[in-house]
Image (spheres, helix red, strand yellow):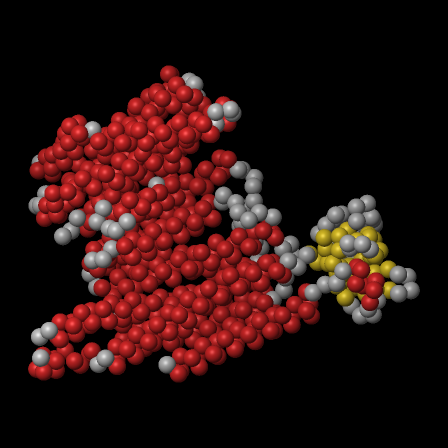
Length: 232
Length: 225
Length: 172
């Protein structure tokens, strides 16, 4: 599987690069500003793809964890680890760009909206996952425990979303809600370009990171074995 | 029937050792008591604000107490190689999980049942006619917390930096329990009609069922040798 | 390794190009001047002025049936301001005490600003911040990761670990 990644990764990388470059050009240079939000709507071209990618990454992490528990393939475990790391970056980016978008639009840096809170919880679960993987020495145990954590987190996230949504409608019925942006055709195309570009970028980054983790493990293993050969 | 016997054995083992030494429950109890004291100092002047925030304070205190109890629950297994023996024993691992869950649940509930009258006394709450509702909410909330916590405790006890990993992993996951328990407790203490906060109890029940089942399945992987 | 650096040099170059194009667009279509600057420089072409609609200066549009609205108001900067006559499409964004951008020509003879378009405060600083905070860390992360992968591949290939196993047992 690593060989396949090595061969096809450049397609994903190039595709990602082209889509993002076109998307950035259209988003920053040619697309019109929004009637109600003005220039600030351009942040949508980074924020929405980031949010989508972080959810995609979380799903990849969940699927990879299930696959690892079922088949025990260590490269699948590397892929899950890679997906978690890259998703964490995109989730943090989604939260940061969302906050920067909210300030000029609604004059608040943060609101206790269900989506924002769910994304924060998602980020916390991912960071917990990465910390857990750092703190376990035994590779097999690390993979198993991390897979269980990822599965439980994935099951938990919809419940978190709904509980915060109920709580919010109970306490803040009419506050700001970051939804309902009417998108004209001219704005849709750069948005789709950026979204596709970042999906491809996520897959590319996950592939590269999987190889990195695999190679590091390989190097550690080979070092150990080379050392044992010296004593033969 | 061996399954249920294993559950009984594990739960009885923890309860018996606790009755003899009382170290777990006493540390949980004193920690929670100190938490209540500190909260009451924060709100001492403004009793109205204290009443509004009371359900949150109660469940924060219970949450921290629960983490201490859960942390100790598997830590005792590390001594005398009990954890390895559990791993290689032919007993069904799910039964071990349920036994541990029951003992954790009982410990945390005992501490809650001792603490709650103190809350009532210190903050002059009016609860005599709603006690059964409050107890139901405590049970459901604690069950959800302990269901996930028992699994994570078994996981983190085998890990470096275990004291800090348990809260880091556990607290984001039990956010629905906290929200549901706080809102339901608020509804019950305010004397609201049942229908207003019934959906929070339903949320707690769903969370409990889902995560007890998932943890039961997952425990197999945690105690694999 | 060389191809890696060439590739990333190319990506950096393209990113700089896009930044340049974006900045050019900013100066061409977004950047504004203040009313003080306008009164000082007295430009002749179409310009964009950023100011605040003074309270009490907004005239109500007439009840005409045409699609064009006529509104007059006073646009104030920090120290000075200018009277504006707006003739254009529907202006429901226009409100008193609101900071706005008016686009039009400065009429020297009447000392009035004839605006044909209004738009919102650009807030471009936020856009730039969001794009930088979003893209730069990820680019940096990807660069470091790819570099590490290349180095690891080279190191493992150089150590010839794929072949040494069987041969090493003979040599002992």
